[in-house]
Length: 154
Image (cartoon, rainbow, N blue to C red; front, side, top):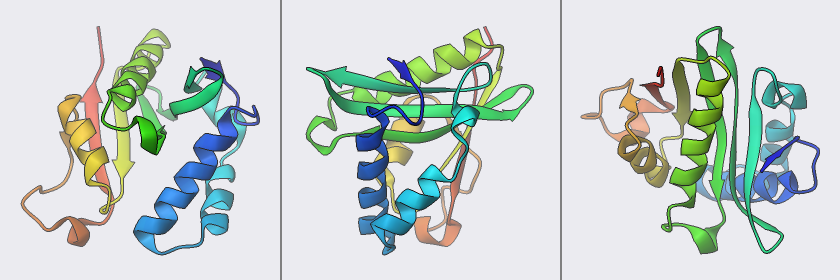
């Protein structure tokens, strides 16, 4: 379902992302939550973006967003799956839905980044057909931010 950043269904996504990033990168969850919320909500709203959540029995279990990167490119952000639902295909479902929505809005390319300490995200993007824009032969931590791209033109 498509929502806005201030929708109560977005809160678990942002809270869990902040906790997850804090545990992986040694930063404060409050600081990271503030950083996640620093993006203006309209960046992730029509006509240039979207924020979606997958809901099961009224509870958000996965989600993600995209925003305009340039006139041809959407940038995926905040891809998240609740810990209890990981490994069940919900992340891939969210990415597919975001790609479809971006394509429907005229974007022809997706760009995204993920952190060096998120191997599950790297695996998801590779399995979904994203091309790494970094040298995969280097140690992950020496690369820092891991950028990816994918053509989505019809």
